[in-house]
Length: 238
Image (cartoon, rainbow, N blue to C red; front, side, top):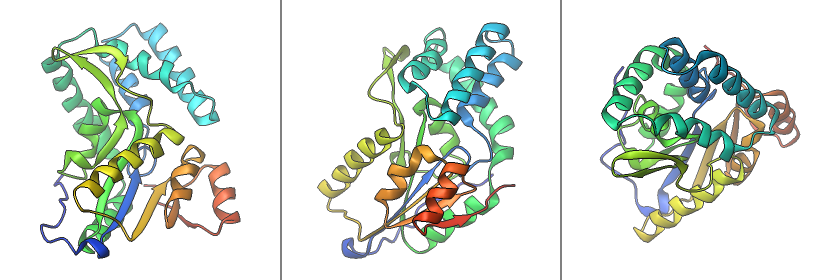
């Protein structure tokens, strides 16, 4: 699958616009965090009974909006800490190409390309960890600086099993987004208009931040909220 890259010619600072895309169930028709756990089980890289039960419980908590995202992050990071980086990257590459790539939503690609063609900057933001997001986002963008995800700590080229900061979840997404925007401003880049796309009630803070909010194949809570606030609602399901 060919990558989409930002146009080399950017409009002036006063004309720059930014489109922010959630990843799971927005750009892809799946949850990349949950499917990573299923990939590990399928390939007998973890104890099936214990890992699958915990992975399923965490996913259900995410859907319900009750997830302790730090606890979940450390659950995922704990596996990464047991293996060296080349081994992890080989597994990840296989996972992304064979499990995630078939879930890429064509309507998501089209929406992102429309922004790129218009000269807008594009940012992918996710509650999923940066180990997974870096690889999945590469299906859409070449620029790794346009990614925000939950950071996992690394020491001596190995994952420690801990987070390197707060999870990029709910208000945490805005925390990291504001840092990213401040860094852009320090480089002389500001945005006159912003767009945000997401499927989840967990991203109501992110969608409320944007000038233009788009609820993408939303869950019931977000669908109701979007209707009440006259946000656009689009169906990108495959």
